[in-house]
Image (cartoon, rainbow, N blue to C red; front, side, top):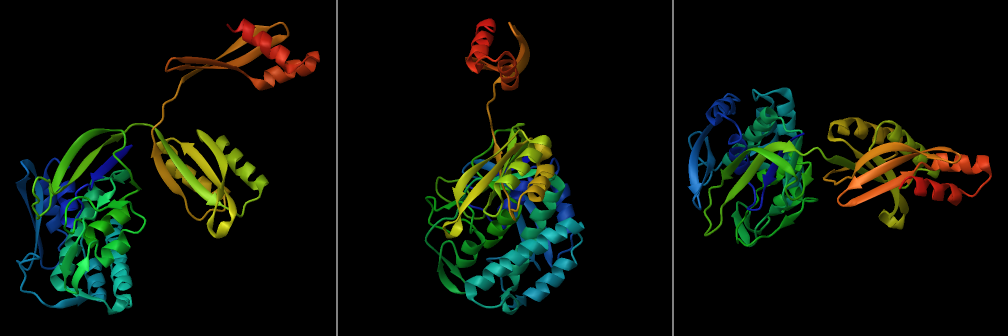
Length: 387
């Protein structure tokens, strides 16, 4: 499985993520040409190689009508409707356009919640809005070109302290950023600064499947996307790594409180018949103090989409959780032991210094019933003959 891992231990901004993704390509300059070919009005992309703390990486420079954010003479504002019109006109694949629009809708909703006004009444600083469009569009197109099957991120460093904005001095993370980070594992870190921007948070929210430490993977490419800030003794970068996830398993889980025991048993039986590696249930407490059941399923990564469909089909859940798991397993083999009363099949598991042999219960039970003898008598003979 092709996986992209983003180390956000020093936070994330849109330009940092774009720069990190760009470095994963064999020819970054060719990709920059594709970014400029999106024809975002007034936007120009240029990439440069920089060093931070002695580490070389890429930094994406984005200018709007020749000016970059932070060095702007622009004081005009732009409406959400105007932004949507711009997004509809981008020269990108349709799936990329849908992703960009969805991400910007998330940002608009976060700003709306932060300021307590309807989305349609929001007016954003023109340069900042266009810079965000550029970062979102660039990251979305590059991810489309890379085509990872799974995107994983570390927990996100957000920094601490305050940040100066058009709305005054605000706490870190800023309100809109905090709204976008809901449900995402974060930490303050050691740097007094805004380490995660709304654009960076929105990109993570849309694309990342899991927020965990780095999974077991074979790294094929890696790249540092450098930010504009410099910190003493700390590298300000997003570290992107792409490669192959080791072929472990996907765990799909859901909580339900409206299925009968018979329905749960039927669902698990169907999932196992469809080839699940394992499936089971656990009693859990749910919201409003209701007792419920957690249904868990293990499947191979290549079967993930099929089992997502099957989980929704055979359970009443309206949402699934997904976790990539590593696992250690014993090697398995099968055989037959001849007893006084006939053959008994068995399964052998060995490795990691252990060896276990387990008789097939159905064979033991059948012999015990046929011979009218205790089950333990049959099991004891099997164990003696299997040594």
